Length: 249
Image (cartoon, rainbow, N blue to C red; front, side, top):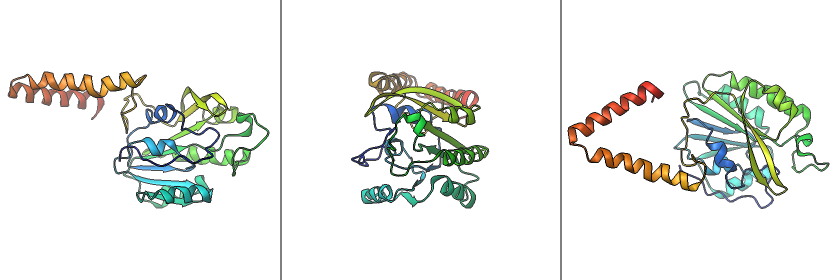
């Protein structure tokens, strides 16, 4: 399912991913999955923009207003659960038959007050430092499962850098209501093969993305079409073999 049309909540969120390019940068790091779990659903621009391709989706949030807003949008394919994100996620991993499925857990928790550098809590349900520790402990346990990818978004923060020091991390700038902010994206997995769930946002800008999607692919197809039929089939055969040997696809 390519890109959901769920309305953004009017009030938004501190650290929300609605800004142009932010959700896309995250999507460009997400490997293929059969199951997507969002422990802190919020407005989740990642869920709204990624191509789900028929995956099972679980959206969890402690805020009943969030669950209600998603239900009002009427997307029946996403199972909405009101509750504590790390508890529900742990239950899903323990009770669902996910051992043979590729699971992606994308976490965008409420940011620590020290990272926000504000005296006023911007969330209705602000996590305490103790809750951040509990969540991080759960995330580490999830990451030990071979079929589970865990991804965490957060502003620069000593606690997250310390607890996730062995995870892969990328940094990028995003635009917020308060101006430009530095985002850290922590991933429990290496991504050397570059295989993605959704390739639509690969490229530094819209022109490069257009060229990748249309011109480069079209030029390759045109070259194949000009070949005599047997040579074309042979080329397709060798290309498949090459991809299998190089990338395991």
